[in-house]
Image 1 (spheres, rainbow, N blue to C red):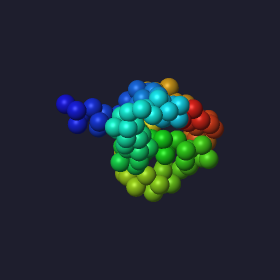
Image 2 (image 1 turned 90 degrees about the vertical axis):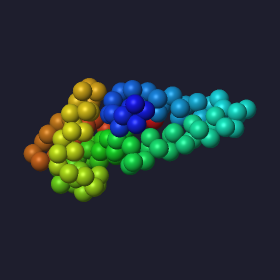
Image 3 (image 1 turned 180 degrees about the vertical axis):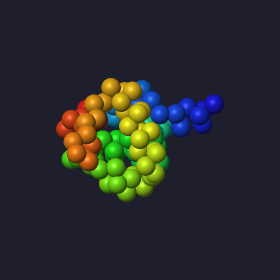
Length: 115
């Protein structure tokens, strides 16, 4: 069950966890509990990596802030065309506006500025 939860892509929920953990670390909430701080740092590192779906979706958003084609997204994420479109669906279900201009997909600049 835990493995399924990690593989499941719910961008809004993961975004909330990511920004909360990052804020807690920044405000030194875990300064007295070294073990909790290390666990939070480890979680943050995983969420921001390309090993997590959320991390890959954030990378995709950063690429689309500049405008990116499907080929550029595939190459940048090292994934299939189908996976790119699956990520599009996940992001659109999280109310991320993705626009297509010619061959370039784009999102609003600064979309990830909170984290």
